[in-house]
Length: 215
Image (cartoon, rainbow, N blue to C red):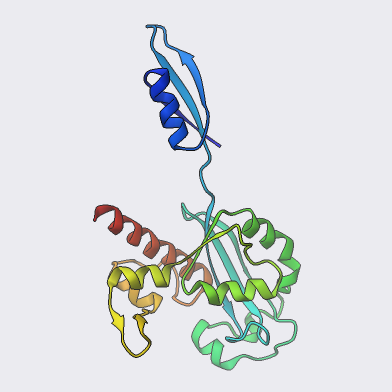
């Protein structure tokens, strides 16, 4: 919970509190005026990205998972050794993770409880092409619940750019690298690494939200 101090008449403070869906705690000032404290719950927002051995969450496994909060703080960042898949050459060419890179790493299920605590403790989950990342979490029993707000930054960005894809009868989707380049984002790591992609995704989402506020 976060405390917000509000000054005004008792009625004004109560109206502000009601608009925020909370209660006000009244205090008297030395000059006879009134101020109140509103306890406002700030939603917990996380942004995540994972790299995998392939596209099918039922046949492939998570190679790395990175989760950051709205301020960019790293909540989780780890690489994993697949339990069943032995080689993933097509995925390796994209994400740069080869079998020898994760030979001595734990399996994803070893971190399951930690990941659950972070994901299930969030109010909003942001991801670029969210259905892909979340499908892998769902298959490992650590995906979001119906109570979570899911924000797909790829769709948010596509709507903001406003390019219509007639062939697919929907907004034209853009790669994360293209979206990051468009907003002038400077990468803090190699693209297609889960931590670097999570940070880039968060930057694009913040750009979208700033642009909407300015409009």
